[in-house]
Length: 301
Image (cartoon, one colour):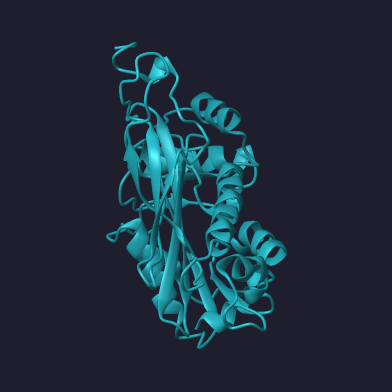
């Protein structure tokens, strides 16, 4: 299989293999599974950097796996949800590559007092029956929700989130709502639906619409994630030439520049090939051999 990534000489060195590798995906078809226009933010990166020919698979009803607005609860993990989207798309696609994404929003996994957005992109290689996933977390997200009971509260919320560039959802309850209003484009529509909810149900909730086509910060994050995927696809195993040679674990203990005590900062990154299990230990991955004392528990407890 190494020959797939090399030109001419079958005994070419890993360095030669890496140099020609970006052309491997050129002209190959990548099917992006999305009903919410995610291809607009992913396709330009993967087309320009890797040469993929991108097509959209919009027939898959991804809402069956869960909706941000709460009518359908998501029961799968984000990774499994992206994986299931690719499986569902196999009804419409028989060759090439599939790409699906999933987002999750809520408290930061370690900084629980701030809101974060996590995105996953999963690429499935149909021919090889292999997958590659990238994940990224950001604090730059527009994720707001609150109960409202009057017009001024509603208008204040719209102004705060940047409506109409950032769309909103109005619903009768926070979880599993009976009534949901989406796709409103004017404040008048939103206010009228708020009144309708209050009159019929006695409660009203408003929240930012987290669907990709209506959430500008999420669009930027998907664009960034596409770049991370391109980086990973361009990282080649030095032994077998397979794509996706990437960090699978880290070692911590970068020494403090003042006292030499090991800190919690990363000192080594372990790169692993999923195909041949080759691995490399890359010391001081960012070129920094000592950590700033502000991150040392000894010097700055």
